[in-house]
Figure 1 (cartoon, rainbow, N blue to C red):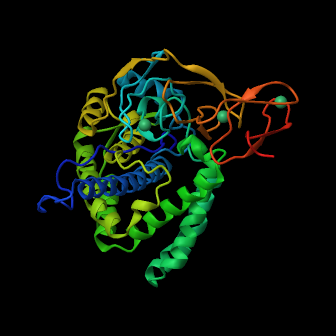
Figure 2: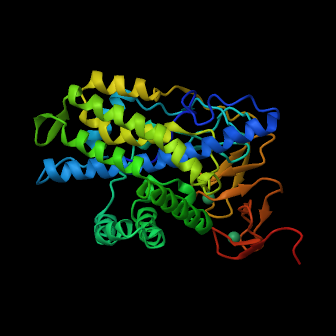
Figure 3: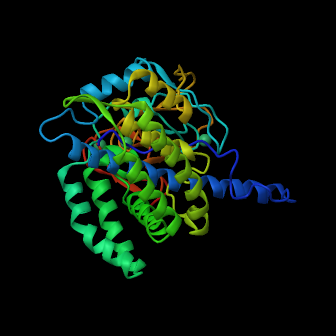
Length: 390
Ligand SMILES: [Zn+2]
Ligand SMILES: [Zn+2]
Ligand SMILES: [Zn+2]
């Protein structure tokens, strides 16, 4: 279903694996502990979102033979937008960077909200996520189906390596064929893309070989099978009384995954290092999967329970200097004090440490992506090198 992109859950305030431990003597150690927990929650949240996607896909196949409104389609978007509020140009989701403390000020294009000052992933905007179609295409489904039997066999044989390789194929297909569901950083950054694939695959391994996680997945399948539907074929709705047990199982999955991913050591694998974004991703993915099928009052209740009722604030671009992405040529605003940003146009991380460089061929100026010593000018393709080279 395509409504799904990833989301992340709020930092867990209770029920964490560390609850009840004596206070850490060292504040830094305590902070690190929370950072690690956040990263793990994020990993788990992404897995849950993916799971919600698959559950919805399975449901739609089973319940809706024949043509139907695609998830992410106009009908779905209208329904979700009606709940989340009308789009407001000139506003941006209210959130604050957990890494540098800066409030989000500049407009965003995708659901992934990156810091205007340090380029860290700050938040996930469910309303933005509903604006595009992120339905997995047939190629992705073919990969999932094509690896399913071998994956089952690998689990039965206790063969983690084979299972991991199969999951990498699945997530490679995901980033390739469902790119709108993944951060725009994956578009033009092969390093980010491969890290993301490895990270998702490792989380899948952790889940597949954990009896408690498997029990919860089985429970989730039963809950989904127990759903009752109303409405008609083209516009089905889920009866809320049959839906809340699904939500209850999701909550337990989140708690379980916190422990599991911590023990699996997934903290270092997330290419966004978004330790502060925890349950929000999982809840958002789940909501993307189901919101459009709930009656409006139940949908509002779900958003409230998930903590996903967004607030928006006016864009604040005062003092920003215009710059141009050396990767795609898009103009963006560099706020005073900003060190790095993620280009909304192409997803490349842009290092703001130096001045813009001129293209000797066409005269355009641009700022190079982080880690790049040269680029092909996005306007004329001539080579532009970072100052100081040669
Ligand atoms: Zn920041
Ligand atoms: Zn760009
Ligand atoms: Zn040029």
